[in-house]
Image 1 (cartoon, rainbow, N blue to C red):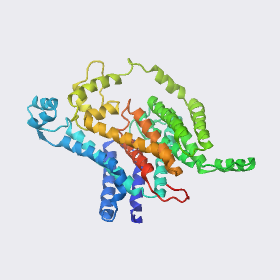
Image 2: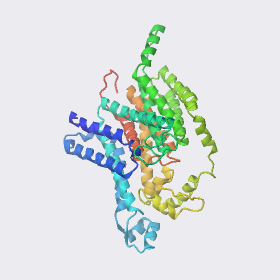
Image 3: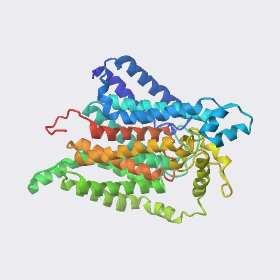
Image 4: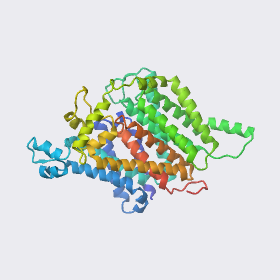
Length: 461
């Protein structure tokens, strides 16, 4: 591949660094900038390189692009005006809804404006996946992208932690005031916690990748190695992880903390059991993370308060379970077609019953919300993509010989499991920043499995 695409790659890196900063890009002006920049990069790539690029290189990655593409095609179909008679074939409830207001032509989406906005976001996500796969074409670029994700997480952690400790109240890019919890440049602490969970996973994976097998050494050599480690990039990375754990705890996000620690514990055990060519350092790494991060750092900065929030959560205090119950009514009414991407806030009031006194923009459960908005077939298809990516992640962890690819397998496996846990109780993929980072992580899982990069060391792929 020509080196002329270097500036496009660094454009992608700039986008990755920028997207979390303006409130997680969770405002119309912010996600419009994201879309504009993403479309520009993609169109420029096709204009400059489509004729010369060997698309056979994308063959292993076609499923992720096809599934994301099919999803956007379906959203387009949701926006096409159709005769009500045809809609009755697709969904009787949908046709009845429009016949009740004497419409003869209508869309599948119950809120076309929001569905259009969601389509533009979705196309930008597809473009980001494509750019990640075609531009991350060397081991050097892979490292740059991974470190970019990690540095972004460390920045958010530092900003969020200092924000709380300094008692600052004004939020960046917003006129809202802080609630005294760590939220970084996000507004909602659970979105912030989810973002940190993903970048923490990347950091842990890099530490796993940094472990190398060593021969037996004398005490003098061990001391020298210890001193070198204290002043090495690995020590800075470890410090960054500690800062991110502190910020995660200070967010007081119940499921954000639970998702991180559960996924870390599971993946650590999995690696110790199934990872080939394990080193003693792997055991020390996981052990130190449990001791330092959980029992020392987290306790000092308030993990006990998170535990109390978990214990004090009750059915009486939470109405999210009732949202799920009423949400199933929408699934029963629109099982195949869905109500339209982004239409939950418009469609949910029609089934909302007693016990819910708040207006819900989101379902606080991504499994439920995606099924309501996109229908069962597309939701299952997206679920297949995520589980497929998880399979590639664990394969890379177990079987790839390159330390970077094994570490990347660990990182993406941990991030995907953490995400699958967190989305069961919150709408963590709605902010564009989190969606972009998760899509990149899915792409990295496929890269970890299939990449044939040239590495400097003598090991084979």
